[in-house]
Length: 391
Image (cartoon, rainbow, N blue to C red; front, side):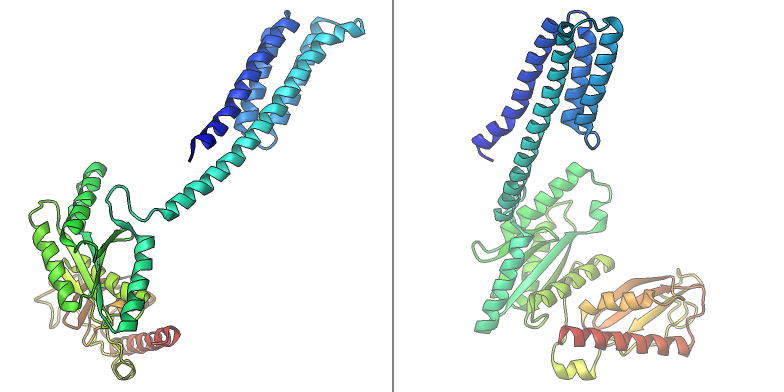
């Protein structure tokens, strides 16, 4: 916003204030008998015109002030001649002029405010880096992600995406000021760990880094460096997810979805580093769906009771073996919660291709009919989703 714009906005209240002073002086000179009433009505017009408490508030306040003033004036000073109309007519003219000028100035101010808001939005869109942390804003980082993926696809290169967040326990008892300081600490950690002018650290939806020319092993090494550096800071207990092109995604959306799913798993299971493992070959998609191998639901008083004694009689375990695509976890959870028999589905574990959910239900879920229905529904929805996305 330049100096001229600021002056343009300041001049309208100044004009209205100057007019109000002149109008007040005029009323005092014209009407010496009931000027306090006239001044009060003038103030009412100014307030309703500038604040616009409701539609047409300025005009309605001016009309009300005119009626009140004329009724009061002629109640005290009965009409005797045309010369007696000079005072009330002059005051009413001041009322009308005040409302008209105020409405005009407010319209101009609103137009200026709209233009200023557009200019500010344009400036915001042009700003690439967050002023507080010094990291690239997510909007621009997303564009960098698309550009890096296109480059790697063209030249058959690889790159990785890293997302991170503090653990929930880190945030639990922090004030807003301490949380701000924590975010600044994470930003400084990223800037210190990244390769200068090569890696792209960013903030927004998550803290994260785009790592050009970095494969899966390199991304995990980078994540370990982050953990090692964060261990020196008492408040930094990080959860980190990594995903690499092309192994974990062939589009930026797929890569980001897999990495976000890995981050959610890291947070839910309290793992420090989780790498997104996804399968993309057409043969594997047709033959080995990650949603086609659920083992039967088991009640906690059966074979897994020694590990889940804390689960009540209305809670069950559902285990998926051969589960490899972390981006499918939300799809599984959505399908589970769509069963009216299931009150709650909570992710307990995802390690080495094994996915475990805790189910809460008042109904016995251990019968084969339910598990067959669940398996068929998951397989059907998984195939529909992949046909829609073109996998």
